[in-house]
Image (cartoon, rainbow, N blue to C red):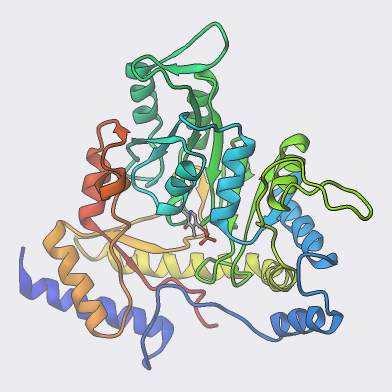
Length: 389
Ligand SMILES: *Cc1c(COP(=O)(O)O)cnc(C)c1O
């Protein structure tokens, strides 16, 4: 490590970021871009009085989402986490099932597995996608699983059913979805894609979230397009979508004046106020993604002149570059960048602590995780909002 060169590179990167986002104040990782369009959409719902889950706005948002992603069915929820929990439930995940997920993930999908009282199993990621490694997935299954005569995938050692797999589109970059889905089909696993960060990203010829059985999105305030808080799931399967809608609306039966419920449901429906905001934002998705991609290109060019690798979109993918990130040459350099950038009012963060390192997930089953450990020690995320024009 050469501290002198490094600190001048930190200052140069800070200048690069300020050239994009202005000389003034604190620069966050991801800011909202809200204007007259959003104000009008929200005002209209306010004037209608139908701010909650009743009204046109929620189904209009779902239709727009279906159109943008090419999915026949979309169900909007009040958070991405709620959509993940619902997706796992309708995928058939039951207490004591096992669900495979990458350890390098935001905590929400792993928690959602536990909400179903199922057990997470951690596999590794690929260095170029930051998403689930199909090789690591296949290796863990080969060492632990068998498909029995009942057509289910069983863990030979724990005696649990391995029900589903949750690849994550990390930082907006699509994983090797074709290979992951092929492994999951072979082992009879359902695929729930956590595309929470990947609105506007594509893999091969399809939108993110459209490669497995169910795809999940988040519209939280820090995502590429926002509904303040909110999420959605998309699927080809009409029955799964109907069941998701039912579960997210307290499993209330469709009756004219009685309140009757046919199971324990959830209050997970997106309110109209959020849907109107989300719909306005969705109409700007392509513009946002184009500008984010142009920003990523400028960052990539700058990093080409440094010893550090900027994370470019994977092969066969068109990424929304939700968060731009680079790999430092080690943990000390990573920490120097984190300290140096944040000290100058430029938000920079490490990637999430891998799930297997958290106290309450430490005992979960896992494969070998060398890439996860390496990426965690070196990755830095930098400001990634839609740049001003
Ligand atoms: C944001 C996010 C979620 C959760 O979405 P919320 O809307 O915040 O509940 C889930 N998974 C990933 C990968 C995310 O980035």
